[in-house]
Image (tube, rainbow over all chains, first blue to last red; front, side):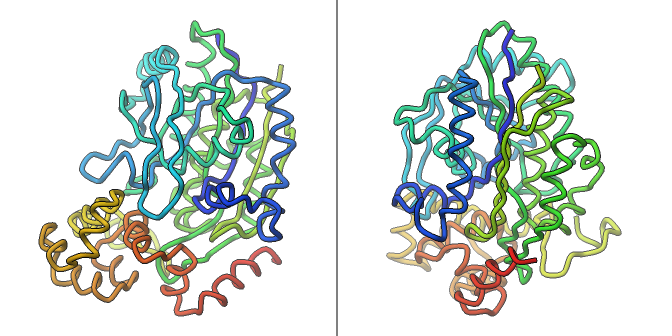
Length: 280
Length: 119
């Protein structure tokens, strides 16, 4: 029976990957963002996960509009990163855990979440930037990863409630598996930001801070928002908050907030960072 | 999820990339998706018209590509994630793209983002 040690939320924007590649962590622009991470690294050193389930959205690397799954999950021995077109350094492949993937798939589908299963899956910055932020300093990534991908490209997007309940089923699947792994669940993306249209540059600090507060102890207060409500309050790409809700769903009802950080701006976004530990 | 179809109030300056937009922009987005490959980016730069021919773009989409105009590209069905790959060919990042869409200078756009932290 695998154990979920806790969850992390982090931004995944490409500019972070470039900042890491170029060693800009101490620059005044980047320092308030990267200063959020040493406590996360200390926590990871303490809880020692073997597996990371990374909940992210593909931005046009693995999936195109010809076939666009609402929910997809990796079932591969490794996940390659690749050129996304705008100059982010390509990282080495990330090791997977196909046996645990298939146990999770069996359980999710039995629970009514009909996942698209991927035995070949390229992972983009939505996945690779969090991996770099959490484990890049280790040299070799010390965890096996399982990508869970949620469509935030083409409407209709799944509802916040549906994503939260996917997370609940995911947590149940992990804990019921025969694996003895220690698992951390990572929700990526957000917080408020908008890249497209005349409203580009929209950021809403008040709404973000409310979400970061409620998701700890009252996540169900957030799941009745529609995607439209979230876009209105957090910008078009603020819809990535559904990825955070999926992470939260996978954790226990009561969690302990270990660490948080919030900073505006990195690139076009407000960045939110949380570490939540599962209640024993 | 057009406002007319759903009765939901539109959000000014925001286009929901729904089924209608996705059908309208399919070929444009397919071309931009191809720019994940360096060879395709080079082929576009070597002969832009010939490359657009391969993807059978509409006149509206061709004009928007020629104009390097993001709002026109969205109007023609472009999705921002694929359009970002087009912008990347010219070394433009999301602040450049944001500045263009809002009619601001890049410095003013960046200052607006910083100011959002003061609220």
